[in-house]
Amino acid sequence: MKILVVCGHGLGSSFMVEMNAQEALKNLQAPDDVKVEHSDIMSASPDMADVFICGRDLEENAQRLGEVVVLDNILDKEELQNKLEEKLKALNIL
Image (cartoon, rainbow, N blue to C red; front, side, top):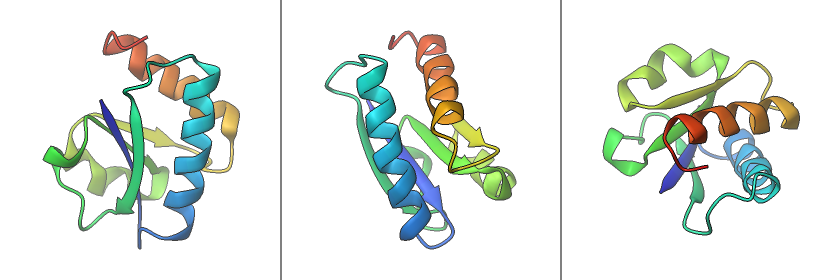
């Protein structure tokens, strides 16, 4: 399974959220085959990942991608972990 974190330019904020998502997956004891990467939103396509993560500012643009986790605050690790847990349980990954 692949998770792709997207932001406007695919540099700073998506990389930071990628690192936080990796930490959250460890905390959730997710399977080792769940991988996280980052990209810019314009390069992202539905076939690039199973789940996408973005900030609220990119929610409308990200809906074209498929399964999306939308963060109200990209700096909030607890929000990220809770929403990842909810999505992964809904997909029967956890």
